[in-house]
Length: 223
Length: 416
Ligand SMILES: Nc1ncnc2c1ncn2[C@@H]1O[C@H](COP(=O)(O)OP(=O)(O)OP(=O)(O)O)[C@@H](O)[C@H]1O
Ligand SMILES: [Mg+2]
Image (cartoon, rainbow over all chains, first blue to last red; front, side):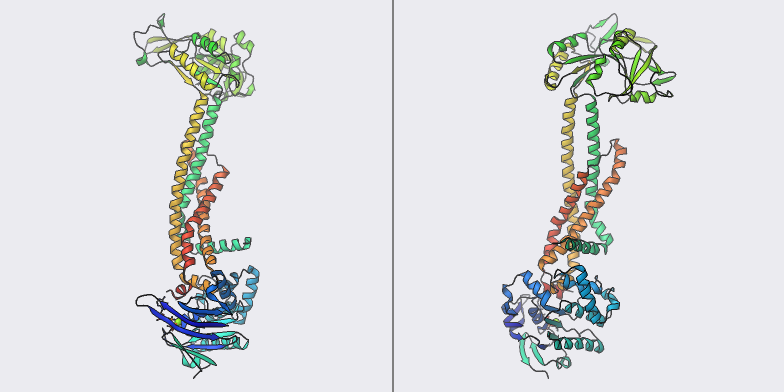
């Protein structure tokens, strides 16, 4: 699905920070992977790299067999829109759009008609049990509800890959468990799921865990 | 690029702007006032132009009009001896007419006898110039008969005491059932009104008598009674109209000939020469200058308006950096982001243009009242205003939109 080959990401600010050092990694279809590391270790950087949002300073990112360095902005954007669903720690909902409009947003960039977007978003919102909240703004929802909206938005395009950056980091344990259950279910439905966490107890639930510290990757099993 | 897609972009832009109504409105002020001012000025300018053209057209573009003018006392040198029998003589003379006829054979030279007498209808004073004319006089001007008929050859030959008045005069005569057939009194003589015409002349209108009637009844001597001292003035010909046919000698050439003759015959310059065609050219030149000034004002106000809009868009882009990151993660390309912000700017500037048009349309009645020029809207002015405000949106929106599109998605997502 994704292959990182000797990827290095350097931020040339101040003394220069190497957020990723010579990272190589392969994520296979239907993998269920946890990425574990302390704060500032480069987890988000790695996720953005896999999500085609960032470009490596050195090295190659292969997405479904294609060298991403050779793709144009429009092609990369289309790949992000169609094949990848993002879930972020801080939900990243557009604050002035309703739940419905937030969930419709990825479909807009795929050029779907308004009514088709609406139908598909409606189905996805009902799957996360938020139909009664469809017309609300994100600010009117609880954290757990917001994260469910974010998941609905990530899934509405039926992507093959789900990338989640500490999706439970801002939630209480019950809401967090709900989110984890959804991700697990997605994995059993055949999706590829990669999730970041700095919580060891959460990482234990993944069959495959990649540890990261100071931008260096280390493959390891849970535990 | 479907219609729905464009409508959605516009709708989204409008919604975003409506979330900050006051801010959006303030940012529009420059463009609203600029467009409004230009629309109003164009309407008033057009109205003024039409009025001037109508006035000039009323004088007849094929005519050269000469009027006798009493020179001011300062102009009369004591040495000049053109007073006969104690009366001071001034103005146009038969010799002028003869020379015009000789040198401009293709022209019709018409003579008017100016009667300097007061007009009354019963006890109502009517204030308008009185001119004795040949029936042919009316052929030289655009005349519309509103009631009755024009002066006829027989009225002139037999010196009938009849008059034709313009509508302005007719309006000041308080006769029940119209002025036609009524008797008016001019300097002690009575005249029956046989026609009412529409003919651009002086603001007060004009009263026309048959030439021979006027000349016979009133003569060429005027007695002015000023502070007990009687003053006699003599004026042979009040007005000369030189009417040129299309295929004859051109107006400028004829005017030059006329000017030369008059300068020779009238060293005191006791006449006034009007060439409507020349006035028309002056008016058109004036209009061109006015238009140029207007274009400069429009350009300046659009640039100022555009900067106001650009300023607010830069603030909006900064404000929405996280949103840009989210949209990029959800599949928006740089082009999508560019179009999103550009459409917002265009919606903003176009609403500015529309508001400006409304403001301009509302301002015109006020301006018209102040200037006494009618306001004439040309639909093209509104279309041009809208197209330009649209263009301002595109031109001044491109920089903020590019800035938004070029932002790195990861930087946007990490922002805050
Ligand atoms: N734009 C940037 N400029 C400079 N340094 C940066 C930038 N973005 C990230 N970094 C640095 O790169 C390193 C990795 O950051 P990253 O966000 O990937 O860490 P993380 O593991 O996700 O941390 P956290 O758990 O706190 O989210 C950090 O040291 C961070 O300070
Ligand atoms: Mg992080």
